[in-house]
Length: 236
Ligand code: SF4
Image (cartoon, rainbow, N blue to C red; front, side, top):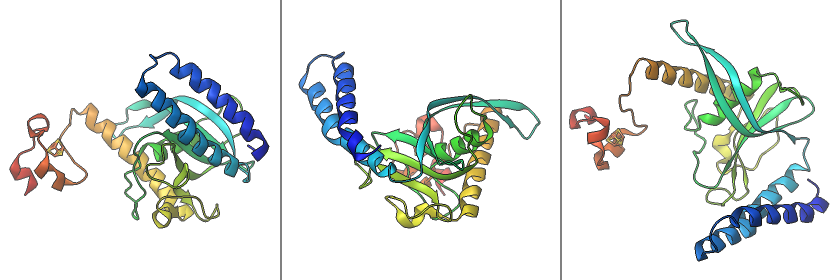
């Protein structure tokens, strides 16, 4: 989007917002949320799109449904993974970024291979393996981004939470050091995340639902042991 398109896009967003919020009762809360959307979320979104217009990347997929990604489990069973990707931006060479819009919190980048960000890398692997019905081919995942629309986390709406520093210049990121990865490291994160998805599916199929909190220390303050079945011995 060029700076000149911005006013047109703002009007379009305002019309869509009015129609959407107009379906609900005209309460104080409704009006406040509508104003927040127009004054904050829409402006942050437009800032991000204006900045994107100065790069070689453009949106090439929107709300893309993938329904035929095949995954072979350890016992040889072939399953299909489904997903709906909010958006993919790509350049002419097929380098692409997977994008998810967020109005609330989202996981941050970590300095290690094991990431809390899970869905975006899994989507990147699925996108890479799926031929498009139409539009540009995708050749290499170079970035994973959340659009922090409400501004809870990032200074810019487009928070490039993980990206390939060998393929891209410095990107807007709320955790600049952790988000910059080499090509090799980013590829390893994608593989590791898909391996994690496979393991989770195998666990579900084996009826294994044991509680495995990311940080066992939080169990000490949790009141849901009855539900998850953990005992104090598990914490030792
Ligand atoms: S006690 Fe159970 S539910 Fe609570 S944090 Fe630990 S694993 Fe999760």
